[in-house]
Length: 281
View: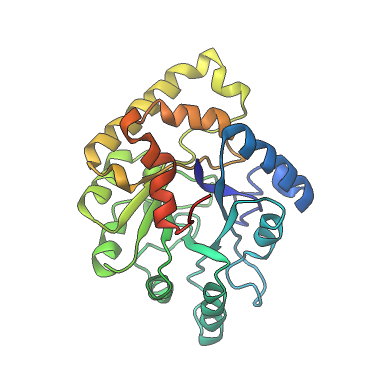
């Protein structure tokens, strides 16, 4: 199984805090916890987000993520595309980081940052993503910050950049939750758009078994199932947990309940392996 969306460092998003207490712990502690989660869930590869506001010599905010990746077999880094850092020196450092092969994708935090996906500051990153054959991930949907602006996080505007940048492979993180059908339409319409299924329910392991949450979990799983069917693109969906916001073992079972058995191998492994060029185990 491949987990295409998790966190091992505080993302430093405006108003969002660290997301989870474990992310404030030393790298060795995070790595130990993550290795246990991956083993329990049967995850062999995982992709972890970097952080905003890193120093100039770490233009994609992946230095700490890479430090933890050295302690966790199968962990890979995703760099942060900051639309406010686009001068020639910044972009040269980004290109060098991508050329090193240590980064598997780029990520933009729509909503948290008050820029739409078509903002000019993202265009150089799209061009680098195309040049280095890197997927470009957009946060879409609900946020963890009262300072975020949701109109920037709606998945429909990604259709514009998918059309304007056909050589870039875009990913809608969180399937645009709660706008799942809108996100599914963007996937259906554009052959260069994928979606990940992370963060659609959060909480600790016990919360996934709580009786009072079952109605909500069933409703969410049904909405995911409808969006999946609507898109008619089983090869464009990726499993992700959003760990540590959700436990890997319980969350993977939750997503499995929404995906027909015929397509689970694609969603839980094959699609991500091809998109992120992960090779074989």
